[in-house]
Image 1 (cartoon, rainbow, N blue to C red):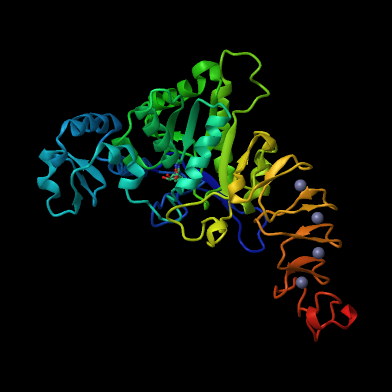
Image 2: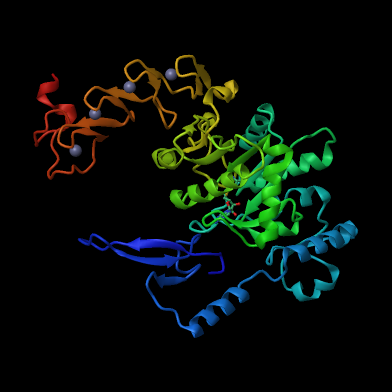
Length: 423
Ligand code: SAH
Ligand code: ZN
Ligand code: ZN
Ligand code: ZN
Ligand code: ZN
C-alpha cells in the first residue's frame, strides 16, 4: 500500500481455532485511512496489481525530499516579508506559488527561529489510529536531552520524536560546542521541508520501510556506524495504538543494522534505547526486549490533556521510558519528587514505596500500591481482593463467575464494607 509492505494479520472468528490470514496496512488500523486488504492465499490479477501500483504512485507526496531541500534553500534566501507558510497545505511557499494558494490561510514572515522549530509551525496530526502526534512538553524534552548528554551520547536516532530532534538540531546549529546530532525517522513527510536527507528519513516504524529507498537506508546505516558505532542511542515515541510486535520487529532490525559493522564483538551488545510508551504495555515490551526495564519517570505532552504530569495538580501521565540501560544510571529529577531507592538501585517516583514483602518498589502508576497477601503481590490502591475471582480487582468489577458476592467472604447479599467476617 502507499505506506510500504503490508503486515500479515489473522482474523479469528468466535469458536474458530485457526482463523484466516490476511494482509492489511501496517500503519493504519482504520479502513478509512488505508483500505488495503488481501487474503493471504488470494490470487491477485495483473489488472488489480497494476491498479494498485497506480494508486500507490498517485498517493505519493507532490514534491520529493530532494525537491523540498532545494525549495528550502530558496526559501531562506527570501526576505522575511516574502516568507509564507500555507496552513492549509502545510507547506512553505515560494513567491511563484502564492497565486495557487491565494484562497488559503497562510502565515507571513516565517523567521529562522520558526524554521528551526517545525513542530511548532506544523499542526499536530492527531488522527488517533495513524499518526497520533503528541509533542513532548518542554519539561520532558529537556529532561530527555539532558539525560542523553549526561550519559555521554553523541548521536540520537530519533524515531518518531520530531520535537527532540528539532531541539538537538537547533542547538547544534547555534552552539559551536554542542556535540550531539540527531537523525529523524518519521512517517510525517512534512518534515522533509525543513531537513536535508542527512537529517530526516521518511520512515514507517511498523514495517521498517524507508520511503527513500536504498539511499535513505544507507543514510541511517551510516549514522549508526559513525565513530565505530560508539555513542549512539535510539529514542522512540510511537503512537500508543501501535502494535508492539510490529514496532519491536522494526527496532530489532535497526539494531541489527548497527551490529552489522566490521567491528568485532558487537554480537552480544544492543544499541542503547529509550522506548517511550504507556506503563500498561510493560509486559508486552519485555516479551520482545527482556533486557529492558521501565523507569518511573512520567513523560509529559503539550497537546494531550490527559498525559500531563501530576505534580502541578494536573493528571498523572501513564507514559514511561523503557530502556536497556541500567536504571541505576538514570537520575530522575529530585525537584519533581523522584528519589533513589538504595535497595532497588533505581530512581522511583515519590509515591512509590518500597514493599518489604515484594522487596521492590512496586507502583507502576505513581500512586502508592498496597500488598495483597493472597495475590502475593502489590496491587493498585483502589483494588480489593475478590474471593470469587481469586485475585484483586476494582470493587465494582463484574466477576468472572456470575452474581458478584462480597469481596471478603464471597457470599452474596452484602458488600465488602458490610462483611460480617470483617468485624
Ligand atoms: N513526543 C514526540 C512525538 C511523538 S508522536 C515528540 O515530541 O517528538 C508520534 C510520532 O510518530 C509522530 O511524529 C508521528 O508522525 C510518528 N509516527 C506515527 N506513525 C508512524 C509510523 N508508522 N512510522 C514512523 N513514524 C510514525
Ligand atoms: Zn525499592
Ligand atoms: Zn508487595
Ligand atoms: Zn489480592
Ligand atoms: Zn470478582
